[in-house]
Image 1 (cartoon, rainbow, N blue to C red):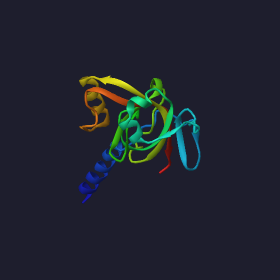
Image 2 (image 1 turned 30 degrees about the vertical axis):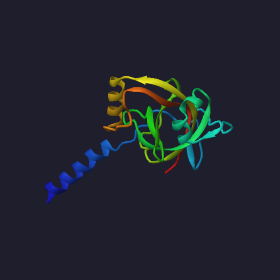
Image 3 (image 1 turned 90 degrees about the vertical axis):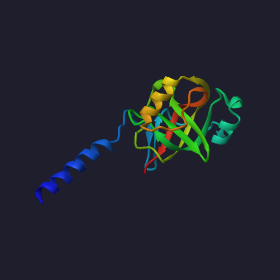
Image 4 (image 1 turned 180 degrees about the vertical axis):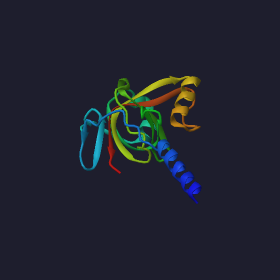
Length: 159
C-alpha cells in the first residue's frame, strides 16, 4: 500500500513539473479582469476581424489595428508567440522586437491585441522550430510566404 502511495505522489509531482506556467514578462497593466503585456493597449486603433486580416491581407499590411481572437496554441518554451484563431481564420502572432512574452497557460483565452500585419517568407527550418516550440505537429505553420501579426500589446483576461 505504501509503495502505491509513493508511486502516486511521484507521478503527481512529475506531472506538475510539466504543467508549470512560464511567465517571462510582467504585465504593463492589470486589473481584476485582465492583464496587458507589451505596451498599454491603444483602444483608438481600428477594430478588425481575423477574417478581414486573412481574406484581404495585402490591404492591411503594416497598418496598425486591434483584433479580438482566441489563442489556439501558445509557445510552450517561453510564450514568445501564439496562434490566433477566430472561426476558421488563423494567424501566427509574434511580439514586436521580441520585446515581451505571454504566459504559457494562455491557450483557449480570447484576447484583444494591437499590432500590424506583415508578410514573411517562412523557411522549412523556421516552421519546424515553431512547431517544436508549440509542442504540436500543427499544419498551421507551413513553409513559404505567410502573413503574421506583429503585436505591440496583448490583453489577456484572467481565468
